[in-house]
Image (cartoon, rainbow, N blue to C red):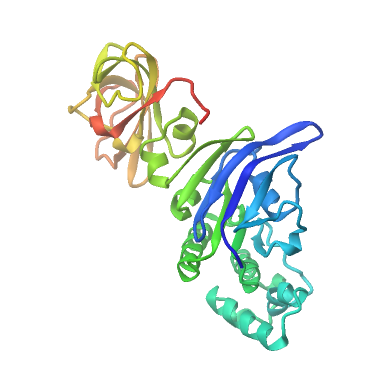
Length: 350
């Protein structure tokens, strides 16, 4: 099957309310693209438009070089895995996995071969004769993935597939999905999630959605280390977002002159400085700032300090401290110039 997905200015509306607004986005063949955003951002609507479950009010959807906008779901050649598994409870595992193949009229020998292949690939071959009720949540999700892969789709759609699992199972399944994609490098995956860890771990690129619109697209490293916009900085990982005034190669924060790259903003402009908490150090150093500790949280391997800097909250995630400061203590924080990114203040669109 052909792979790759292209949204060509796709809009979707329900009862006059736009829930997806002019989406232009391409998922390359073999790429894992995560759609990341809060509830109501339009990410699931975009996935459903690819699946054929909603019809765009405007724009076109392509899978490979085929315009599939007017095709029913069963003719699009996609595999799909949803949050609640959607397995048939009366069917054994092997029959659930075979369902799509039988619906497509595959030969019996081909069905047996592909069912065996995909169950082995997902580590579920030993459970072929069981019913879904006899499986754990993680095992049921593996069966759902095997069923999606059995038809050998060029495109797989994953809609919050791990959100019903506990933290340990989510971690295991992320590793499993990454392994499966390495084994099937030509398959394109569109992965919908609101969990930034899932997106950062699995995706080749991330499309950040908010309020029905695409805000920013980039690799996980690009969006984490050098986001362009405030929404991305705040949604992809934790971030210190500090209001500053731009100078020439420096910015001013509450009377402190800090050295950063100012190429993104004009001198004299108001802007926002983004610094990730784990890049903030305690004590003297470059770009030193003094503040007062308001809260200390022990997180096992780290301590998180909440520090008031002239009325602005700043977070510092530090390797576990033997003697952490206490609330009310004055502390010096610092960060390297190359670890700060200047954002245009108030900008959320891209």
